[in-house]
Picture 1 (tube, rainbow, N blue to C red):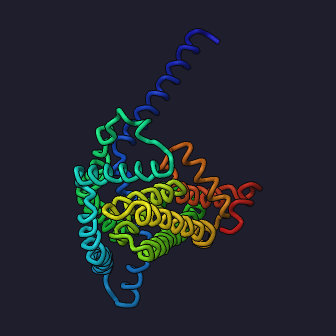
Picture 2: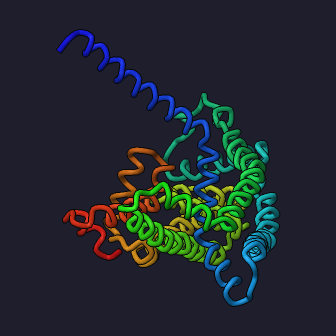
Picture 3: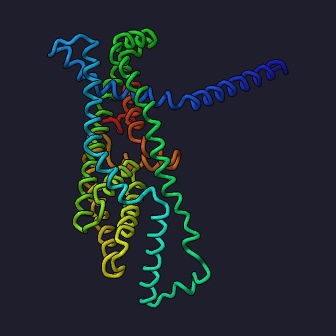
Length: 362
């Protein structure tokens, strides 16, 4: 092997690494566009049966079937927002979630109530913190800053929604054109596997997202009942926020429970700490723990295992590994990505014994 051959090999390797780095940077730069395309594709898969129904049963042409379907989709989300958003907004205002001074004042009062309670039980908090102004060390700006960031993000979602609807329109309208183009690109030997994979992925992901919505709705109802039983103010918005946090597997419910207890105690400021605030917070925590037992042992195994055709332990391990690799985002997208990989593996490597084991129900 000559030095020229070695040099050429090194140059090729460097060139490949540079291309990979450039490609990774490009994909990272257009990640928003990729997300829009992915969401539009999911909506296309969900909406296409409606388009087919309108064309077959109502004799709509393709264009008007697509327009009508998107109109129904927008109407559904609009009515959903019309039903819930005003209530959430009004209760959020009464919670003073965006008012730093109000939160700081309530937490400071809560701290002093807790100090008095501990003193009555022989724990001298003042001896430990006598030279510390607790309020000055509480960086409560993080709460309104976090919520304001969420609101700012929601405000910018308008562009994303418009983009997704625009892409979805053309995905539905020109579906046959895109499929014909894909068939030209896909080798004939792989066409059947790819089409079967897409069909199964469509079915499983649709079932998964519907199952996720059902799970969140059940958890919301249970949280709401718990908060109503113990007379917690703003029960609807607290239950709604905690239910949404359940999208994050395992970590979300813990955050939601802590948040519910904190808001329950803050909302109870003005009452007696020992006989009202503390017992109510403990009862809420126990209630949320019972809800999580129901959700973890009934809802999730029945809904997710059934919708994705995976064993509960399998789902747990996938989410755990994804969380270790990619954090919270990885935990959220772990199950859909794993489902897609399973379907593709089953179609392209059906003879592999391990793949046969994990895909036997698909």
